[in-house]
Each structure stands twice: as C-alpha cells, then as structure tokens.
Length: 377
Image (cartoon, rainbow, N blue to C red; front, side):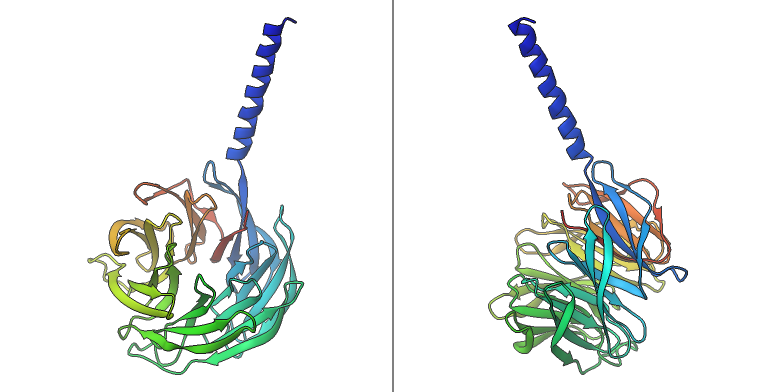
C-alpha cells in the first residue's frame, strides 16, 4: 500500500472512531430513582433515561420500603436519604451498592415523633441530613457516620404557630435546606405562613434562630417548597394553598428575605379545587417551573435577568393527575414529572430559548409515583 493509501486508511479509521465516540456520547444514559407508593409494592424503583432521545425505560423495583415520599442523593451519589411518611414515619439512609445498576442497601432508619417528614436534604458540607417533619411541625438535623448512615440528632426545633386557612391550625414544616453558603437553614412552614431562617453551624450541626428569625407571608398562602436562583440573590417559593409563586430578595449577609412579587399559578377561568406543589429554576436561570394539582398543569415563567421578576410563558397539561414532583435530567434538556394519581411519569423536552415544554412520547406507567431524582454523573 502506498503512502497516499495509508493516509486515506488512517483518516477513514479516525473518522470512524470519532463518529463512534460521538454516537456513544450522545447515547449516554442516566439512572433515575423514582419512589412509588403502590399499595401492592411500595419502594424505590430505578429506570434509565436516554438524554439523546428523551426515552425513559420502564421503572424496575430496587428495594421495598414503607411509605416512601421525598428523597435525595448525596453529592457523590453514594448514599440516598428518604422520607418515610405515615404514622409513625421516619428517615431512612441507603448505600448505593452499584452505580451501574443503582442497587441500594438499607443502612439504618430513624423513627419520627408522630406522622413522618415531608422533605430531606444534605447540607453543603455533606456531613448532615436535614429533615422537615410535616406532621410534627418540627425540623431536625442528623450527623452522618463514616458509612453514610444516620448518626446523632444534632438539632431539634419544634415550631409553634398557626395561620388563617382551615388547614393552618398548627405548624407544618414542609421544606428544609441550607442556603448556598451553608451558613443558614431555611424552612417553608405551611401552617405558620412563615419562611423560618436559622443560623446553621456546619461544625456542630446546631441550629440557632437568625435575626430576623423569619419572613412572614400573607395569611392563607401556605409556603410549601423553596428554590434558590443560580445567582444566589433570589429565592422563589411555591404557596400550596394560595396557588401562587412568591419571589424574594435574599440577603446572604444577614440571612433575610424581602418579598418583591407574587404571581398566580392557576388560569383565571379555572375554579375547581387545586393546590400548588413543586417549584424549580432551570440551570440557566432564565426560567422557573411550578406544578398545580387539580388543574394538573405545569406553568413556565420567564425570569427577568435584571430584577428576578416573573412573567408567564406557558401553561401545559402535566399528562396525568396530581403532578407532585418533577426534575430536570443532567443535560437540562428534558423535564420529567411524576403524576401521583395519574399513575405515570411524563417526559417533556425543554426549549432552551423559550423555556417551553413539549410532550415527548407516551407517559411511562408507574402506580403512585412520588419523588424523582437523577443519580449524579
């Protein structure tokens, strides 16, 4: 073979290699954990998601556990922490035994006082698990042992208060996370109509009241979940009872919130019962998403880059009843929502320029799906 032929063969081989590598990269799949409260078989399922095509595989049961609801993964993907609702409820810790299959092993379980928690999170240091207990109206912090199991309770704070709605006769701590600096812990308390702010000591796991200790929202709002904007300057809250998204300025030096906007999540002509559920901001910071249970919709808002104010961009059917949780895939090109009473998980494509959602294929069947969380890549 002459030199020209050798060069042609080498170039052809390189082209074939690069093409194959590109195909492999595009076809890369991610694991997604989905909880199910199917009364016949409750637990944590796992499925594969193809970010090239938006295809979600049929979920397979990994491990059975009682009353699974919200859960989160540690930053390194080695551990999963879950809320077990019910009476009594508790918090469970699992080890991820195999990152390829997502296999889980129960490490331990901490029982709650009374009805179980609604939200768990891992703090920024990765050393503590934060638990918002809805039924008990309190928050607590657990340190983590070297193997990732739940160790000592380092803080416990019982909330006291109520508000104006018939459902607000007592505290209902619904969401609990630390801020981007890991110096503050924020709690959305649905029963008190407050966003409570604590100082958080990452060395001891202790919570102490901040000054100011909370931001009060109008009576009957029912703050459920919060989300920080990627710039760390704005916090958005979903009001379950009032069906609104609340926008706040966040002062990271003082740990204080100042509300500057509130927008409705329901269409003006929708009059049936409905409660808002989940909220998230796209990684690019340009769009905010919220879900309505009753109207069974996802609403998309554009976020003003200068002011943080929201403008309605789209309202789309969730593809099933009671869209309780949703998440973005690791590429942020796809949006997955679990329709709790619709018995499915639905996939939407995300338009990077407009933020709008478009149905992708048929929903994937799963009885009473709850939290949906992608494994870190």
